[in-house]
Image (cartoon, one colour):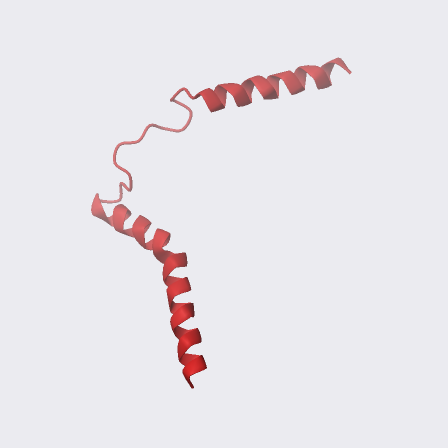
Length: 68
């Protein structure tokens, strides 16, 4: 019977860790009247080095594929 109890406790801990991010998101979402992370910028309005690099890579690949 102890094995079943141990497995139950371990599974409860794993489930708690798995659903903690969901609980945190729900907590933040209900905290500010449906505005989960405060004032955020719309997607694509902010400049990012990663986005610029990705755009350059996409343009490079498209130009190479267009020449062939």
